Length: 238
Image 1: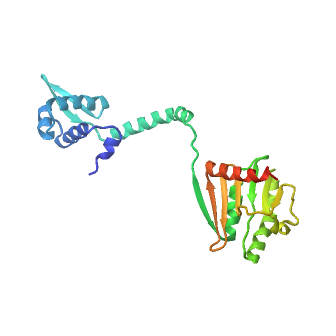
Image 2: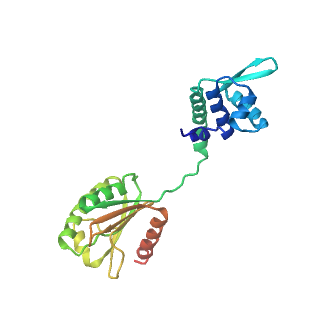
Image 3: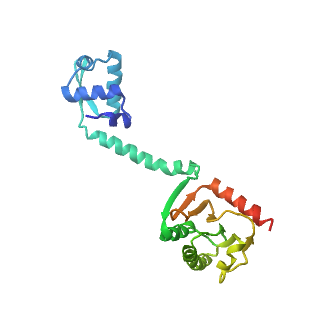
């Protein structure tokens, strides 16, 4: 039988030994408990007093001697419930003291449908005035390229609904792909830049579309700030 659960809820090894000895022996004096457990006299007497305080053993007096016996083991469940209720009362104060920690997480999405899902997840908590920065999607495969940009035209309308401020930096060679889209907040450059990246709040979306169609949605404030700084290092110069 695994008795470590009793240690987990605050019983010492000595308390467990003495308690189980009493369970097996029924009523017993301290001397018999010392013999059965092999614990020192002082340890057994101290432990018996602790178990009495916990309410899981009792005793009757016979002359000058005490005869100890265990209570119904179900009392231990009551002890657990009392501790649970006590912790519930403390929980609001504990939560108030907790300093929020930014968690770094990465999700992987596959295929065009995965890219769509990742983009909607990227801005799912958006509020009016939030900023979305992007280096546009690029693929050497023209059919795939067009397929993705057809979706981006629809996605533009979706993010506009939330009042998101959008800024992009794109290669001049793909300017024609933005026909029908607002170009006020997009600048076009003739030098190499990152592609397939979007930054929103503490999230970064990165797409790999050459060997395998995979999108990564990464929650990392450090990474988001790094890409945001890179974006504005180009944006400000233009």
